[in-house]
Length: 472
Image (cartoon, rainbow, N blue to C red; front, side, top):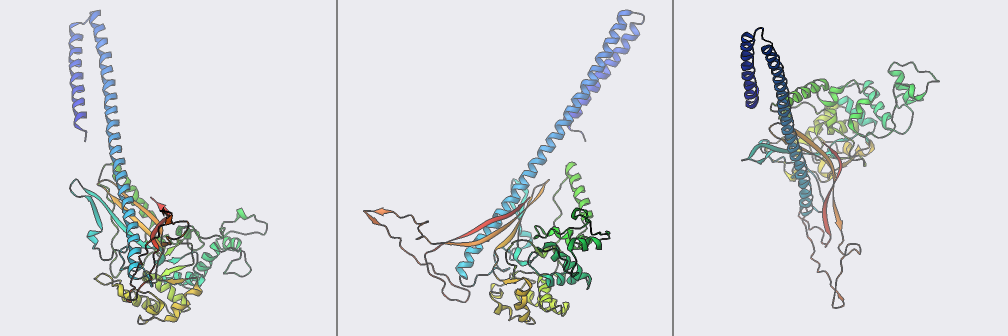
């Protein structure tokens, strides 16, 4: 639909053109055979064409102005949504810092991270997760925070062959297919050139032949179809480059990438047409939910020593680890043990998780009915270090306006850094009357979850959060 100023301009041009045509016809009739009349008619025709051309130019310029104003408005909406998303990330980082301080005050001897902590926001109702920035002036401007414990996932760069095989079996693969893909994952990241699943064979030649290439002894490395980087995964998406895994993108993402691309194209078309583009929020998983996609149970962060927090690890991760630790005895019994752990933690309860049920040591895990503590103790041999306090988190900020939706993700590392104020590098000693002013020491006393007194000292503790990766 044309705007009002375009309608008025078009009406004026039509009226002027009509008047000129009437006048031209009158002159042609009255001045027939008159050379002067013919000249006037030619002048009128030229004038008419000039007016038509100028009208077209004016309409084109008006259209360009209209498009430019819409694009400027859309850019403004995108900018506002982006800053709302960044603000959400900043609020999430503040939650992590506050949790670190609270954790030290309440549990200085046995710190832990669990779903009862403030960063998990399990006590916040779904409708309250979306925060309105200015309810009166801009009720459509909102942000939402989600914090995910990266140490609740399987470390892709540290888990050994058994864990990878157990993961493939959990998602429906049977031997020897589960073995082949597990070996391919390990070969992709290890430092040697030997194929793990075929003794004496070289990785690139072996997998290229498996892909159907006719491999000759004199072939150069760049002529082979498949090549292993022999270095750690930088992203979990690289798993789709691994031999045998590239055939299952839906299993990895949890959706069909082609269908997702079509949805994004439709969304961009809606933006171009000026329609409301608030993205469809992901459906909240029900209690009887499907399994998480593989990308949501793996991590390449941090590049440490394979830490997995048993307080926050989902059922899928726990099942895979227990299945691998019990030498693939029974996937059903491993899942039952994992669900017992989740029930004990209160994952599916209608109330907020209880901090009293959070694990603080392996002894606490041993109290869960149906869990073989020997399997938990075997995790170290699988490249997994069970922990109860996390250091790496993924903070996701979502910003929404009436016509834009932006998402910002930040992987952060959180540590409670301790400084001694009497350290020569930090102390600021002042002299008064030739004498050094002595700092009055006020011991800091905290209480652990068991009621024991915490450490007493005058150290300075700062909850430092450092951004390891930023995606927008």
